[in-house]
Amino acid sequence: MPELFQISESDLARLKQGEVPAQEETLRELTAGTGWLVDFIRKQYFDSYIPEGGSKIKMITGRPGSGKTHLSSLLL
Image 1: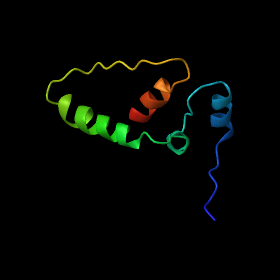
Image 2: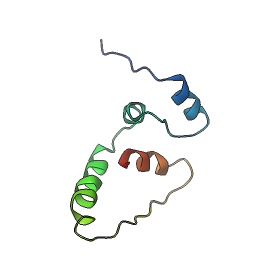
Image 3: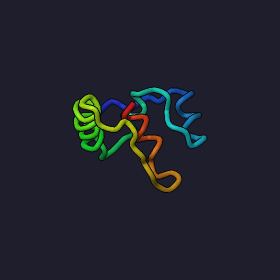
Image 4: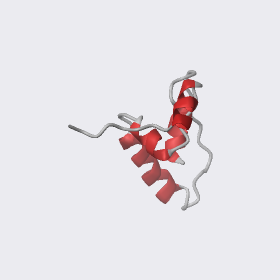
């Protein structure tokens, strides 16, 4: 049987308030289906485009609760 994920009380409180978890492990455990996107952005923008002089400003748009802050936190 797989090991169950344990979430800290502070991260649970943040989630209940609609905030992103503070711990990276919790954030990654709660993320599904975006690994390819995060990997693409890190490789294409952080590893090559920006160091070669590309724009550091990117805009993420979406409705409230769509995951903008979650995605931004993953990229950080």
